[in-house]
Image (cartoon, rainbow, N blue to C red; front, side, top):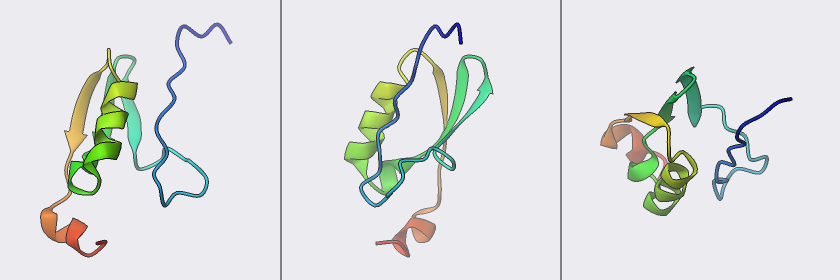
Length: 71
């Protein structure tokens, strides 16, 4: 595969399968768009940021009203 790096994203507690869709997406080779999980789970959000160190990361935030319906 000639890989330079493998990224292991943290698994959300409620996610049975550990998938990354709706969590992170490459925009370019070094730029990743992520959902801002800080409104949902700050501990998970910190782990996600550690996993993506070295990349340019852009956060996409949900409104607090949207996240409130999942609490």
